[in-house]
Image (cartoon, rainbow, N blue to C red; front, side, top):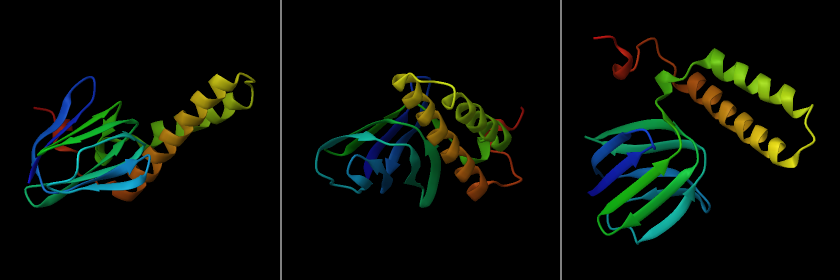
Length: 143
């Protein structure tokens, strides 16, 4: 086992022991297991999977960084969303807005930003369609 921390600037998503972590880095899909060699890499948008109490947990993630050191792995991300928390309609609308704006803009930096938004919206849409359930995520149940 290794100590895993998954965090955004706003909150810690998970901290605890895990036996497995999978995500997309500069080198492609990276799988972290216990005793992994020290490693630092940029993380790309995609699906992050890790093992918690014998069950695989999955999240849609944005860009960030991965830091592996002896017995510890830190994943620092801009955004982490549980699939059940994705609003499919909102993601589709965000994609459509970005696609419409990209046709009107001639600034390369702005075009790159809009392409990143489209990529993230596509990830949210694909993730929501794949994992959508009628049961709300436990964090979204009113007290």
